[in-house]
Length: 268
Image 1: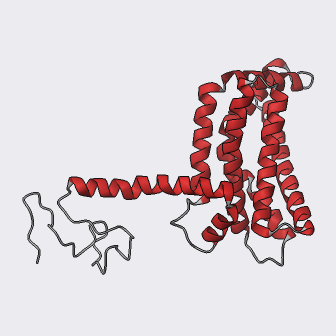
Image 2 (image 1 turned 135 degrees about the vertical axis):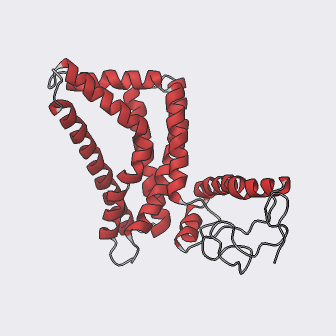
């Protein structure tokens, strides 16, 4: 039986998993998946753990972005076939880019959102009283600030429509959703660049919104085509699914925000 060190830890060889106490059969616990750790903790152990947990993710993220730029079909094929270590999972991939988008939006987006708020107030000034118009505008600004995260949900209708329009392909809604998440994430990344350039060049707000929305739609369509092929009938169905999916979510968003602003009690 292994002796204990002065710190009470087991030296050199690990016979059981320190996380779940399962007898080890290799370098990783077959129950909880944690790598076998030899105690006491040393500085090389800390660096190795850091490099495996953080630097591997950073390297995977860079590889995913690079390959999605030049060969997206390779990423889709690898992920959907179960090769989950080489590329970043689409959910954390979108969350990482969404976080970057939200942070940059707070840093330099104040003039943009002030102009956006003024535009929204003008749109509903004839149908809502001033206080409710201000609420409607503020709700839309908050939603716009958090929109990168909402894209996790907004891409689901498009994935469902893709499944309905391609019944012979045999893919699942989750597989179509994964491809859509990669596309939306890359579109947001490109949209950050375009928004920065547009604000620097003082592009009008309406035109900037049109450019970013078009980028989101076109890049999503392009990624689905890279996955499914470029035949004319495939192109038509992909365009229909993306247009209807995006339009549905936009209308639901608009209707929900307007109804909340119009019917919320306590506001004159």
